[in-house]
Image (cartoon, rainbow, N blue to C red):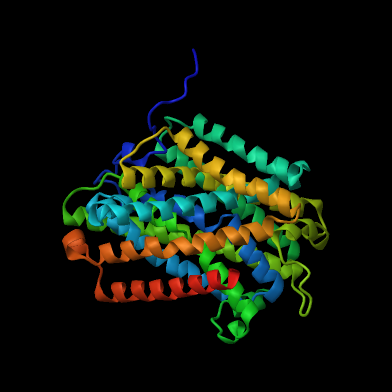
Length: 438
């Protein structure tokens, strides 16, 4: 039997081809329906625990201890609000955010939004490349340029999954997320954090942001938390579930999907919080900022924890984090390309294009800046992501606030007010971050 590369967009990486393929029988008990709707939130949550989040959380924990933990919590809660808007848009209208942008805005505006969305995917993929390259360096002892080159092989993983069901992809992502979680929580057992200080760090404090450096890192954490392409992705992948056309069925689907979204993003919150707590427990000493970058963190963790296993677990978690983002990045790329341009290409081509565009700056960066450049490049990728976020948030909030689009499911006034408040805060914070970076 000869092997042939697919010539058309194939499941499971093109959600439009697998829309309505996960049946939800009406007679099922509530807990079974919850399980059947579980999955899309997991795919989205991956974007909230990628290597870019690791870089900002490690810097925040190592420099300021547990003080910025409340920023991780509030950023995650803001992400839950926005992802629930995205999920409702997809379920109620049967169209994803990219399709709506193409239909509701002038062609020039739609093409501009598409360009910003593609930049966000490439920036996120750049973070995945750098994170996986660092993991390969730790686990295999290779140089960073060789680690960057090895990340090109994940396109083969995408090829191996062509034609598999969407639930299998969700299961694989769940396995990778659990790998990250188990590795990080095992690390926490080694370093034994001060749990009273952890609880105190979760309480919002303006005094913790009173100077420029913690404020800069807090905004970096915020910018790394809400991913622009996730807002497009979620509105599409929720359509893989079979949902009736009447309002009662849509209302039930929204409720079940909300459970999936909240639980999944709370899991992402726990993982992001664990990274910051790990960095604070292992590296923070008042007046001594000896660990500032993710590059240093994995090397110094081993003697601090007192076991060689700690560094290996860190590398495995980082690798699983980057690889899980590979799947969601490919799916998001398909959603954005098809929604904005009405274009379908084979998933392996989509993956190869995105990874190729990310490999070039990653390779140039690690060669030009040296073996300790990953932290700087990861922060830069988050700055680029921050610049794209308002261009995804604005159409999402605007569209879900219009009754002609959402009908009976239009945003309540308080939801609209909260969403626009988040838009102003996040956009202002990201603008400040970009201004400071350049």
